[in-house]
Length: 77
Image 1: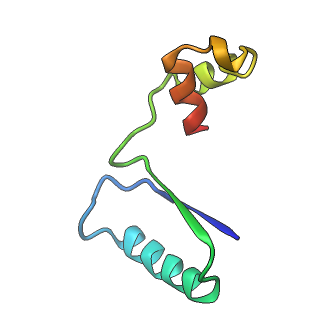
Image 2: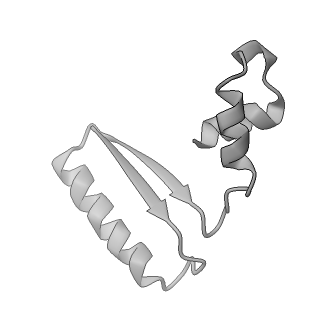
């Protein structure tokens, strides 16, 4: 199983929502020890405003012809 964790608070220390997410993640892993956790922290690493448009365009471009920006955008999606 997989867990997707999205943190969006700009507060990296003392954040109540991060503490709640830590508790939820720990509980999840206790119940599903072999699962993987994918984390995104858009508070600390915001997604560029052009990423989604670039990723959509990249989907219509053969992989071997994609620009570095398209490759990066697809990896975020």
